[in-house]
Image (cartoon, rainbow, N blue to C red; front, top):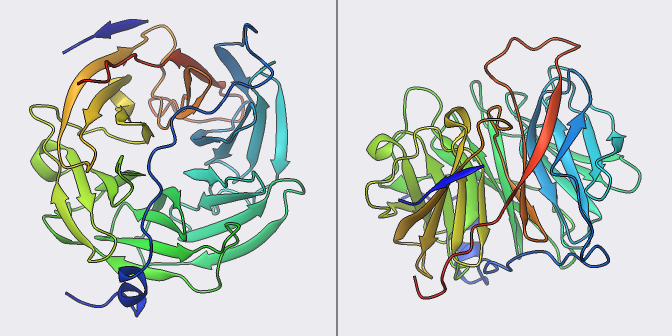
Amino acid sequence: MHRSFARRGVLGAAAAMAGAALLAPGEGVARAAGLTGTRLPTRFPLPNGFQPEGITIGQSPYAYLGSIATGDIYRASLATGRGSVISHGLGVDHPSVGLKIDRSERLLFVCGGVSREIRVIEVRSGKLLKTFTVGSDGTMVNDVILTPGAAWFTDSFKPQIYRLPLGRHDEPGDRLATVPLGGDWEQGHSFTANGIERTPDGRALLLVNTVVGGGGLMRVDPRTCIARRVDIGDTRLPNGDGLLLLGRTLYVVQQTQNAIDVLRLNDSGTRGAAVARITDPERFRIPTTAAAWGDRIYLPNARFDVEPAPDTTYDAVAVDQVRVPQDL
């Protein structure tokens, strides 16, 4: 591995958001309870033909990954690298793209890509609990972040995001709001929004925009839906995909570049500076998203550069987190 340093209402939702507590700040790294000192695998296989895209990890040492090919959800043990499908999808027309697990590890919130679906799955049983259909023709529900009171989803082909209210224990509500993006948001002719996170202070959202400034980061105020470009200097994110925030350190997966750009943000998420770039030519095969456990970052290899087939091999890999001085 090599590192080089270098105003419309929101369908009635805006008023409800304005007076509510906003977003939980970054909680840092999940504890490696029970596995301290254990040599965990840094690479593990996924089922042939799986076509992974999203990954999420809770407080327990298990990774959950979604399949573009079938919509299946696969769970892998970080201790052994072995796993199995815990929820069977509905086929190629119902892919599973980005996903997140809730705090109690009871529910998975899954983006359905071009199916326009948002799904909520019970982890223990694999049962599909709720399905929402959002957007319009051409919508692609791509990534999701959970915050206190809401789950937020990106649409890669429309200048809007989606807000699903959550209860006290992260149980999903029954109605979902479409949130148009204003301010500095620039919508390209095709793929634009991708990964989503929250700012370190928890007051706003961060979204990848592959168009603005040659590829950049946008800060979205959830109360007003106004987007402002984050000042990240000369760094460009034209292939920015998944985002992972640990404290004030933001990992941006640069997909077809086979790299992760690491930024140090200020608390409000209005500015950031590049502090490192992680590459791994031997193991990165177009990673898309990232999740943390212990002192590692885990990424699925989507292999978008090959024609998928039932026997195409896929895997997930782990890299060490970057140690960033706290005074930066």
